[in-house]
Image 1 (spheres, helix red, strand yellow):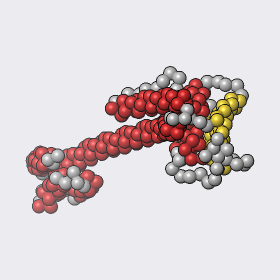
Image 2: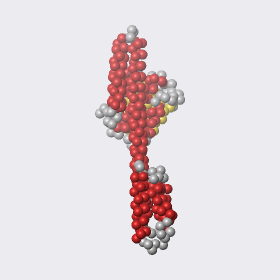
Image 3: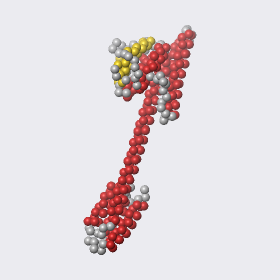
Image 4: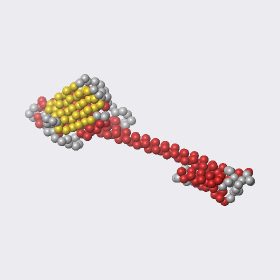
Length: 311
């Protein structure tokens, strides 16, 4: 802002106003002198620096006015520079508050965008890793049996077709969301625990003997809890297929008062959890909802993933 556009008019008002006041008050304690003129001009000159040093400018204008009146010079409009300084300082405060709000809003928007990108990345990892693992296993089965048992090859190819179709659908939904970030994420009406039997069936078709047991009284639970339970189960079974060497696995879904517990246990090699197998993502899903997820060797051998989710 060109501060001279304010400082010059204020200087003119104070100079001519003070001269007029001096002529109208010939009996003032002190007649105007050089010091009086310096004090009258100090405020307007200080206004030239209001953009950089607003607090200092207020102090200078108030000090100049106080000194002028203390020395007994004819009362005049020297206070105009004080009013101008307070106004400009107030305006600057409003501008700074506005800019601060804009920065906060931009930071919040960036944080929300980052969280959404992380959510999409987690969904893509969980869904695509599961389907691609099934495709990999079934492709291996088909190659192994193509000559000896062609009827099982046909089943493996059908499973590959189904898994690839599901993977493409999930990928397309994620890409649609990325192209239209302002829209809500598309969700299937049955997304959640209703898909759990289908996931178990797809893993069973890949050659792993999986059982699903439901304990307690099934009830409607929040969709975020359903999605977390589904993805944690899916990721656990994917890890079992890819890394454990297990021949059997058991999935237990237990409805308890106030929460839902999902447990996936296999009879594989067990051992210490390997970083990078999606375990951190499972834990993040659970803790984001206020729950907990643990993973480690099972007491009788094998490996167990257990998630307690509010709902």
